[in-house]
Image (cartoon, rainbow, N blue to C red; front, side, top):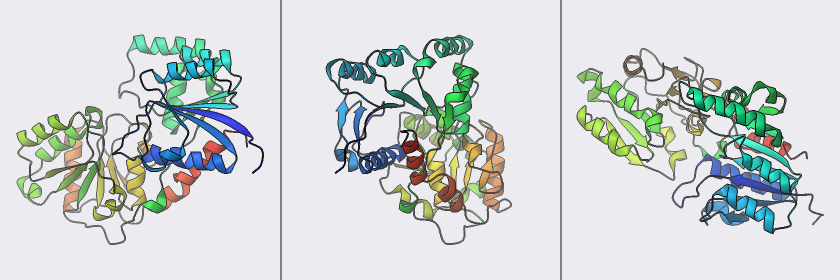
Length: 362
């Protein structure tokens, strides 16, 4: 073993659940492994701890009853560790927290932004507040990372274009090898659809239900849409399905641990979201050779090209979605060819990890 070259801290306001393994979990595991290979020690700060998957390999310091920011500052006050880099995920940008860190550390601070923005932007008062925070606190952050070009532009819009020189994009990625691709021909008439989403209002699944409600009875007769995921908006969606008498069309399947092997059994992913940062389920679907029907929010159009590897419809436009579904169901519009190569070349987990490792000045 050689001498340890770096000691870093990664602060993630990301609750660890025993029954969920998502794209970011795989990234954290892969990044930790890459750091160990480079003899870099990592202290991981999460709201809680878990033994799920490879989390047992991480040195996790849980916040427990404190906020993550409070826990990390308390750690700096009581421990003698000097970090070369401090990386934040899912932490609000440009707050006094970053100024507080600099009181104790000379570390390079890297803030990764995963947060989607509202469709119509923030209210004026909040926009002004963010501009002020940018002026006051952006100087304590050495590098801003957006997980899509949309996110990077949103950072500049929120906090000020003067931070452009220290803002860059590193795309989220997925584990290509774990995703089983569809090898058979996609069904042209009456294709099978799935939705993969956390069930909350901003994901727009209510628009999909309303859009299906506008279809003719003939089209609805053979239409099946499986919805994978759970969340606080589930009861409202079930009520909406009942109100439209669509119980035979929608099947709520809950969270599934083997989802990466299920994409291949479908023909299209539908993602009617109202706000997005950069959707990992879209990347997974394309990696499985399943085209995507979605909205032009967040970074969606950075990966979906209309009529090439999916279809784009106007956000919240139920009528437009219904008409698009009608044409896809009838086979008047369909996607040919593979969608996987794009993900292999631009949006793989390996590439994501490599790009994050580069931030450590190796």
